Amino acid sequence: MGLFGKKKAAESTGPVGEAKLSNGTVISIAQSVDCLGDSCPRPQLMTKKAVGQVGSGNVVEVILDNPSSVEALPPMCDEMGAKHLETIQEPRCWKVYIQKD
Image 1 (cartoon, rainbow, N blue to C red):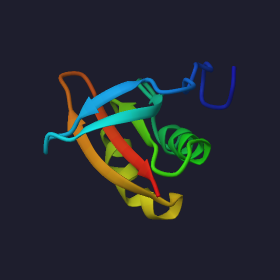
Image 2: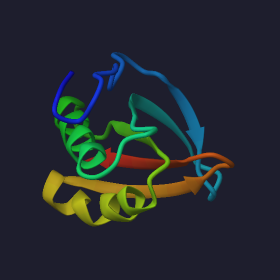
Image 3: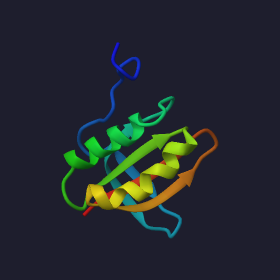
Image 4: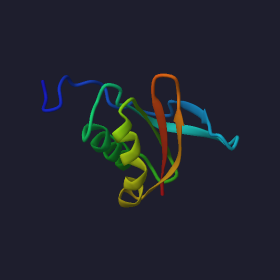
């Protein structure tokens, strides 16, 4: 067991699907990060790692259920060399879409 509890698969390789933003734009997701059940700072660390692993222009989807982590990700985008595209609230989670510059 690691510092933040049980280790789970944080990300997958290759395109993992598509998402539709509120403006109608369909984006291709290069990597998805599952942070369900995780609290700060783990989602931020996992997101930073995922953004560092994708190529320029690629989108990372972060799935969260921790409100403070949802609020913390958009301001981090500048320091990660990325852009916050949108945060979408779903019934049991939020999905944050971040595009690497």
